[in-house]
Image (cartoon, rainbow, N blue to C red; front, side, top):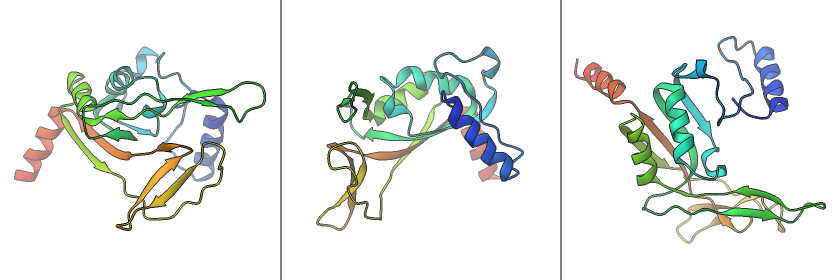
Length: 184
């Protein structure tokens, strides 16, 4: 699901070309979902979406309404109790500045938001990039890496540090079922 219908059409063309009959993309507004999508999916995967939205709790509520059992996502997070809201004003456009978010959300607060929506199990893992990315746009946004003294790399886009994480949350019911299976 994406709000950009042109991208959805391109994606569905690729799906048809690859004969992936069990997958379909559709255009939809996350904030205006049709009621028939409530609990319509076993799980929801969100790639790099949450940090580009003005806040996290309402989208998590929506993801939780879509998914019966689990939600997985990648986004920018912090392991402490701080949220950082960053609104970018990109003046590299001729007519008027382009505005968008690069928010970093607190993992403990995101965990709490999932729990409030019935998703009690929560795990996260920090993404460690192991390749060098050259700075391609010195005057604007564009992902690149800097190597630290210990050999690890951190990602930036323009002036912003990008602390990527993988997050997985699931309903207590699924967690209980999986634990039961592992004990058998």
